Amino acid sequence: MVEVKRQPPEAVPETGLSIGEAARRTGVSVHTLRYYERVGLVVTPVDRTHGGRRRYHRLDLQWITVCTRLRATGMPIRGIRRYAELVAAGRGNENERLALLESHRDEVLAGIAELQENLKLIEHKIDVYRGRLAAGDADELWAPHRADPGPR
Image (cartoon, rainbow, N blue to C red; front, top):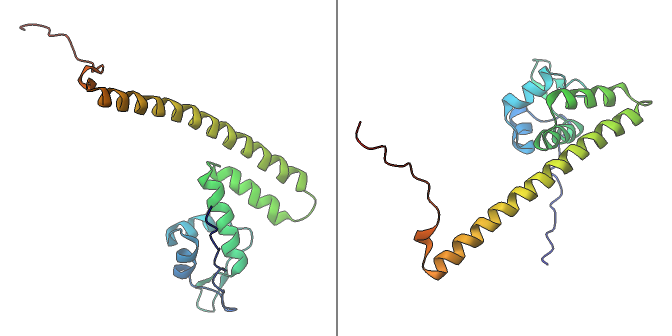
């Protein structure tokens, strides 16, 4: 097995990053960053310059990564928002955070199991096609067609 060395994350300047640079580093669009802020997924308010431009810091980028990974696993926005609310509220709700994450993990695992079952069917169909192509009788594979209704 080849070991892949992870590159250290790019340093974030003390002054923060522009929204465009934050989008580039997190792999989401500028629109998505604004959306996350607007719908309450951001744990702490994003820093702003004197001119009102957003400035993202290391912790902001880390939190955005958490949000995008939760979304990628199918967690609804309302679930991420609830998790963000709990995190923002601080200490004392760790059991609720844990329960939320465990519940989502169970849903993800169920989805993975369903995908694995579906993959088995696809693999079976691939085996059938390969076998029939190798045997030279692939043209005999079932192909649905409508019966000729005759003249109308």
